[in-house]
Amino acid sequence: MSAHPDPLLDVRGLRIGFAGQAVVHGIDFHIRPGEKLALVGESGSGKTISALSLLRLVPDAQIAGQAHFMGRDLLALSERELRGVRGDEVACIFQEPMTALNPLYTIGDQISEILTLKKGLTTRQAMQRVQELLASTGIVDPARRARAFPHQLSGGQRQRAMIAMALASQPQLLIADEPTTALDASLRGQILDLLGELQQRMGMAVLMITHDLHLVRQFADRVAVMEKGHLVEQGPVAAVFEQPQHAYTRKLLGSRPRRDLPPMPAPEAAPVIQARQLVVAYPTALPGIVGWFRRGRFEAVQGTDFVLPPGTTLGVVGESGSGKSTLALAALGLQPHEGSLQIMGQAWPPGQSNTPATRRLRQQVQVVFQDPFSSLSPRMTIEQIVAEGLTIHAPELSADERRQRVIRTLREVGLLPDGPASAVSVWLQRYPHEFSGGQRQRIAIARALIVQPRVLVLDEPTSALDVTVQQQVLELLLRLQRERGLSYLLITHDVDVIWAMAHQVMVMQAGQVVECGRAEQVLQSPGHPYTRQLLSACAPLCSNP
Image (tube, rainbow, N blue to C red):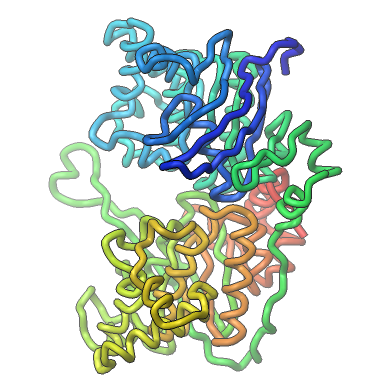
């Protein structure tokens, strides 16, 4: 970190509101050249709005205060002057590159646009520079990747491409908004190392926005903690983490998932899911003339065996591309497979036909997705969303009976408040965007529970949530497991979540199960080198039991 006495960015009295309602209340912070500052807090604390408002990237925001950057007040610049700052002197990396990148343009075209607009390079010069930038972020074969569209890259490659785009104009300040949230532990470590290396090489300052306190401990020099639009504490990372002064900071640091599992069932209990030599394969195109006549084959899951007993959780971990999500799709009957896969002693019918047998099995196995905002229809009320499954699996219910079951289920997941019928009706008519991330995930859980399944497939159910909301959702899932006897197939890359919820753990690498056993054994005494590698990659980011 630079010893330069003058701040690169000095924010004083920043206030932000919408339609007269204040959401950020006069916060002060600064960043020196070459420094890494982490802005942390729960969802809704105001950290992202505070950072993006410095460049006036938040529509309809009412902004007051001062933000002095290299001798200029960003908040006083005209729109034309600010366009010269955005992407040139101050660049941004956003949380989800798949939505931040334009799906209609190649990666190379999107990065070269910055170079031609900001640096005045020719098209040929810009494409040459694009390849150099992609190579500097560790992307293999940058010339080929520059010609790829975003959907043709992995999550880690897309995030590296976003970093290359942000660094194209060699900014003095990089704003990184949750840059590793959707990545597995190994990729998170790689991206953090890459950002740290590039930051040192280019001498730029970094403003990291995150709710991941383990990431802050590994990456940042200083930390500023926000709660409900107020900056409640800031200082060097070591000092704040070891001796937090504010009660909210202590609450955040203490919000680590806790292990409190229901007991394992008797060994003779019949499994709810049993797989033997399960194979899931995809057809692939073959190069050359041979591809005209036949297709290749890629096995995403290779000869996997596992058993899920009733009332327990099987955690499936592995890096991106290991096959764990494909395994979940097969368990849900959404992906054709080979071998034996039985749900409650019954195999999935061949094909994707909508037969009574298929519908009965689908009622038994439901799913909760990673991002509730994208998995819930924005055009349906929460009553319509939660009741939708009943129209298929319980068509005999009347409209009033469906509503009463919706109300009971929403109250069971701790969402619907007690009160008169008129207040309940108002809640039922709200839409997903009117709820917080944790509330939306509770709606998604209620939608899955209302048809009374025996198994829930949990696909990264807490990775998009901050630490305190994550703990609340995990406690809810454990309570439901005890009360309903549910079984969970938990897909995640978060070892803390596995430790909090899983009775058994299955580790996957390149489509194969490399280790399987009780959670205590696998996490505390791993036997396979890959498992040890995974846990060591998590070590800086999470504290293993």
